[in-house]
Length: 318
Image 1 (cartoon, helix red, strand yellow):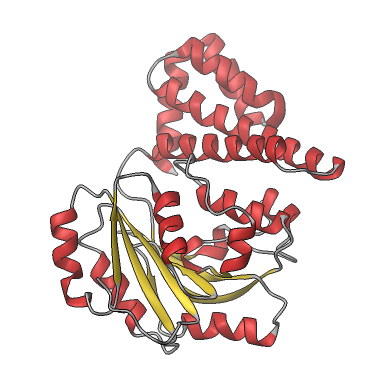
Image 2: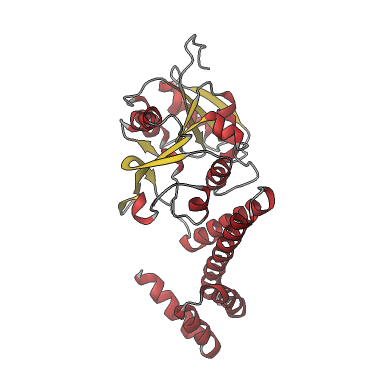
């Protein structure tokens, strides 16, 4: 348990942890080498199955962190727990398998000093997998003003582990939605922007983010697209959008739904579920109108097994 201090820190570092006992030391080391030092650090154990190992890994940091353990409720709940316990005017989010470069907090807080009207700032980062490294903004660029509309169409995309935000802006937007199991951060930034937060970003690389963990990439893509589609549908239902905003969100939701159907169709094709694949890909092509999809549908009609083999070959060469 962290001892009480008379000094109230300006910033609270929010770290949810689930099954990352082997990674959290590097994460925390990156926090405690920051050149900006006016912060507290809260680590929330979200009912992790590796609790014994996690608590052992956290032991060397016990005097410098507030450790909170809760039943497993998801990353959104873990972040909310830290936000509610935090004392800082600002929040800095960091996932427990990610790391910051030493100047990250200093650079982000300088953005607020330079423009006190800002409510949330984020930065470029390096995506790291076992095989490759590449800048986040190469594949997920940010262009122009980071407005609500820009976030809807993903003209601006925000990596959560680079975000520093005013706590008041996150609270005003209603905190993270604990009903969401995926993309809760995307939902949070949409609501934060809609409620008037001014957002800025830097293209400077300031963090290292863990890439996808081993698993089925196609299944992961489908689940992420489904989550984004659900969030956009929720945005239309729950936020008092004007007509233009509503039309934009619905159009984006239709595109994400089509991309989801395409991913589902590829998985069904791989599993020789040819009728289901034809239905999914046909629905996707109603919006996307892509020659590749038209070709696959033609192949499914004439020679489904050959089409499956060709699709697997194309996927292997990507």
